[in-house]
Image 1 (tube, rainbow, N blue to C red):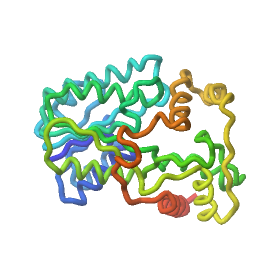
Image 2: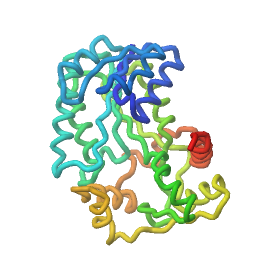
Image 3: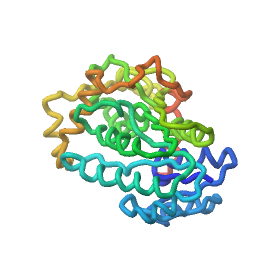
Length: 292
């Protein structure tokens, strides 16, 4: 049996679907039983646990052959990441007490980077869970292709998509969350010892210009990317409601300057199968199928 966190999100849901596809027994871990009810209907065991409740997490992980752990998304963390530090320590204590046979941890590209930025929270998670005496794999995926979904309305309406990834002809590593789920499920089902890092990205890197071309192909209209001036980012993010936008700005700077990269580089990453063009095609078809 495998215990999976984050089952109401994209990656956790993809992990569960892949495990079920292999005929595995799955215990889904969620805070809200209503949101996780669909998994119970598909035969999953349901465990209720919040990231702050160590005792509940111990029970959720206990007896598991493997556990997939993930931090709740924190896009606007407090300075110094106190929420992340506490959550990581709680996860460490719960896993060490429950002792699943092995643990797969969702980290990020650049998880090894010590420079301040939004992804540093997952560096902290790696550091904390690296203290476990259990077998642990840290999965570092690239930029999620799903982020393009926020830009589809602008592409449809105006044909102009604002881009924080710059320059517009620079190629960036990206991956579909469904592919992440498949890799995680595979890792959970294979034996290993000690600690290891697995870095994953899609079959080829893609530039913002190429992203616009993929959107244009599926939307049957002209689409172009427009670089958002760097000196406007902080004020723009504050207008959008962020209290502490600096880590997000630092993260974007890291991608654009190239210091947020895989520790083993592009040559050392594991390549998955879904291309950006295939992902956009599927995404647009799904949106068209949703009743308005």
